[in-house]
Image (tube, rainbow, N blue to C red; front, side, top):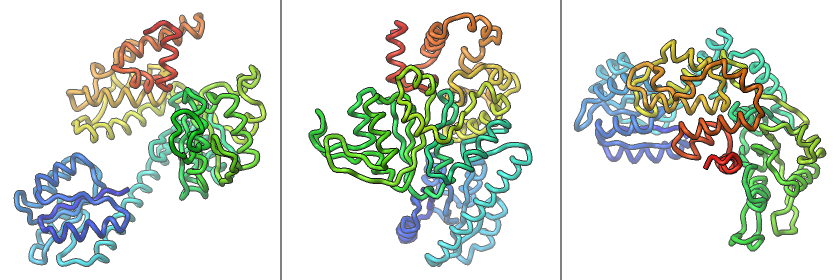
Length: 445
């Protein structure tokens, strides 16, 4: 929802704009003074600011200059009386998008907001075209200049309007969830819900309830009826994250749904029908799990109608600078840090490290480094020691070790450099419950 900050000391104008903005599907944020307006601006980073020139504490032009100086992407519209039109023109030269003379009507406000929306859309298109000329594909947080990944985006667009199931495979943290969301957004179901189901839930009845819903008394603790996510996702898309972790019983029930488009709530006999497109993701070898009879072959074929493999970050090193700059800018803005770039030495370290946690691990490192940085450039001292001290030569010795030893060593290293199980799990790209089990398995308590 678009946030609109309104800075004006006139209570009638604030209340009128609040109602109009809410009716327009926007989220109004109100401030009666310049100081309060600047404070709310830094806290919320609104997309649009409606700013009165005459404020009780600070001149509106000074507030505008402060906003422009932050370099935060926003559209400032000056609210002004006719007597101060000349000042409003000065404001536009400083960096305001436009001005709105008092008294104004709701239709004038609507027109101005529509203009902002059109200009914002055009600016995004121009940025996208510029990046494409440089060989860069951008879709929200999905950034790449890697030829293979650009081909994946092309395939995703082609399959988006199909109702067939899609299986996205690849290591944890490679962006499978982001790609699933893009497929939904590119499809004819884009106006319907996009619902995520975490299949790593430890208890079968909780996962079954989450997916299919339950009736009161279906199991211990089921004190009221619950609508499942398949029902919630009707006319939209359901994303089954880490589908390989489903138990055989839930696999059977999911297979029935995929074949007949119907299901029953846990503890109920009533049959429900929904129109849902299924996208599943896994970081495991489903084909191998089928051979081991851990995963149902018939369900595998139902999910495997269209498969997309997301390559690990170490195979798309050219994307690391794009991702670093993208997230550095975001985290610097969110944490109010004056970090404008990254040193060549730091970038070299980031491009040398193999990123076992992939993009998720990279994001975690950049957020941490941005918060800890004391300079306007990210330098090696802000980067975790396991990244800084990594040597490419370590790779050859690992090849001769069993996979379990390599996994144990890496988990131990991550646990040493993180503050909690949740943070370590995020870096590793696994669920905290899964990490808890692995800690027990490898005696890392």
